[in-house]
Length: 316
Image (cartoon, rainbow, N blue to C red; front, side):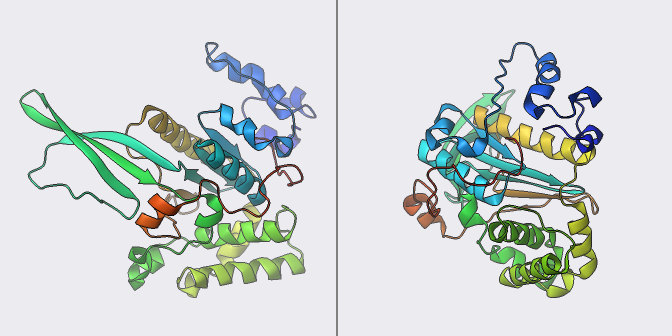
């Protein structure tokens, strides 16, 4: 339902919408942006949707849900072979996660004198290269393939060695990564709720954050009490500039994926509005061959079906 707090960040609604279903209240303003687009409003609880519900969509974008709901929807999308995005806001902070399973795309570039390697990164391979001439220049049309991990596995993945091998690089990794992982761990232990400033919650969240930070092989000095306090103070709130940045980045990636053009997000984008940085971290638990050949069609979620019974922290 629309609350008073929503009015400060959402321009699709007004004071008269308070107490109404958020999707129904926003529908008229959303439709007015482009009347040619068919908009369907579904007010049912997303937790009650069966896995096959998600097979009808080319892409599913889940926002402001608990980690358990994200994992379940991600698993359902993998069963259907459909791309999945998760995104959320916490005040000055936000994130976008992508699981495109296996995505082929084409980029165009000027022909190089250096032969291209078949594998560019642990998750990206070159499948084919064609050429064409444009204004006396030779253009390469390069078909590439990115391989992805589901959220459940990415959330437990180590950082690539490029980020942890050197002290300078470790210091550049935002502590937001550790805090976000700790938040998801907290939600798994607390039936989907956000931590409060009670002593019990503060102690648990601090321990989870420090444990995750050390698991990622990062310097504990980077995760100070000031950042933890600021992160907790931002939980559950929305800021329009952060929503605009994340929404624009996510929308552009979806357009690129649907058109099979340009490099897609791989696979976790974090936004820190306090520091004005938006790093992207590729989080994968396996080596590339295992990713490509042995990745299960569905994430190994404990009892991922049915979705019923998981707590929902907000609308889809």
